[in-house]
Image (tube, rainbow, N blue to C red; front, side, top):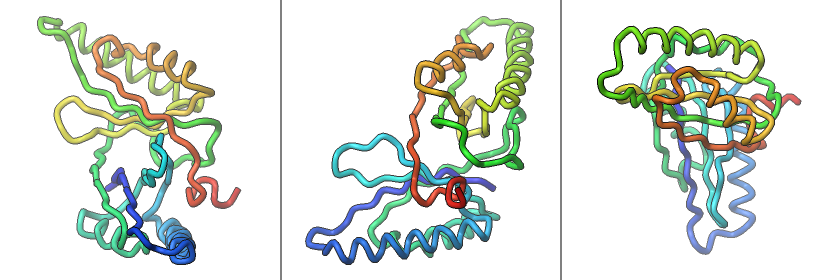
Amino acid sequence: MEYLVTMTTHVPDGTSDQAVDDIRAREAARSRELAAQGHLLRLWRPPLQPGEWRTLGLFSAANDDELEKVLASMPLRVWRTDEVTPLAPHPNDPGPDQDLKKAGPEFLTTFIDAVPPGTSRQAVDEAKAGEARRARELAEQGHLARLWVLPGKGRALGLYRAGDAGEMQAILESLPLYAWMKVETIPLTEHPSDPAIADG
């Protein structure tokens, strides 16, 4: 299973810079080990407020218990709270077996179905078929990296690549289901321990 984990760190008041530097170095080393073991797939930084320390991580584990062991093994866990979102396979997902090397800015996008009441089944089916075709096109173009089903009815999460926020919006508006979805997009920035860039 794959999981999106929002990791928020609060360093206790009075902690020395040396102690922070030490635990960050140990965290980076442990992240490399977890990546080598196949548990840590990606790391990103979401938009942050001044003084905020938050990371988004894509993890893989056999089940919730194994994930908890993985997260508990990370040195920063002593100062960190983790919010775990399980991710289920989506039929339009290009799949994890691709080159993770980034090709420009990345965005996480949450989709919530909001099909208008009274819409015919045929119209919905046609839009979904078009959505699947468009997802394949975007994957081939390098824009759609991953797609998952989120907990709750009609919710999905996409990892996209685009040159900037304007191009990302144009990509979203090209989706056949866009007019029937509530969409929230989070721009991501590079994390120094991201396995996708660690070798590059």
